[in-house]
Length: 408
Image (cartoon, rainbow, N blue to C red; front, side, top):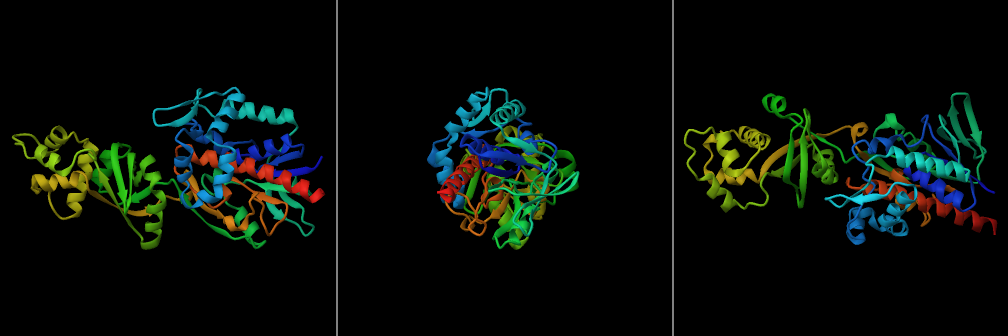
């Protein structure tokens, strides 16, 4: 049997280990943390969103410019295969109202425990508290451990060290320098699926921190997303924001700001809103009038107040048509991107032109890479985990093919 090292005990690394041991390799999984799947468990705290049920063509389009590079891996291990895999571990799944796929338990821990038991029974070895630091002059893998430095020789290696979000869970991006020193091109790691900062007024911040915006449409440039967002003390975050995070991030990093347009009632056109807002207010406060006439939430009305103040006008001074326009075109100036350590995932990583079709690094024969180390990003909704699982499986298969060809 051939010894293979998998570095990283997250979904991509564990899936690579499963593919390898199923193909007859002897596998050791190394990880800097004291246990496996730390970030995977964090992802399951609010209900583990494994994948999505939409048609595969639509699913693949979520990966945008990285889609051609991920297509083969995801087609070889598509969402239905991931659901079957979960069921085989005793964790059947269901499709939620949004099309997202979850284990029936809604938890990551039972799935991870069953998976680790199966890997252990198959002979996979684990070495925790082993922080990978590169290679020595003889090409051996170097690790820093509680007992000091270790150098380990392996025929092949799968790198699955994650990106740089939530570094306290193990994904700290320290591998970038190791690969760059070997001539591997790595795009800068940047926050993805992250929140953004906004200079809210003190009144708005104190009153609406933690309040959701439901059923809104968010627009930046030519991109519009329907969904929900959340007001935070320092800005705004949430699913609809994450879906636009790439465009918003590039604008903020490029010119220092981005204008996000919020539509509070996207299903009502300007004429319909104008008719609703042309009624007599009587003794009602403006907030009560807007709440009743246009079914606006207090936080939505607060956003309109913020926009009016920023424009130098009073919301009460706006004519019905102006109010109607503002309801579905509230400009919010984003001034910064939340730090990468708080982002759900990260963009950037190993450029795909550094890999062959089996996810092997062309400059480092026998070294493969998978998961969030690669230069792709996707919105939340199951796409992040699906691509991590699929590229891990593909890298594992790639190692087996490379070993077979190098021995023939």
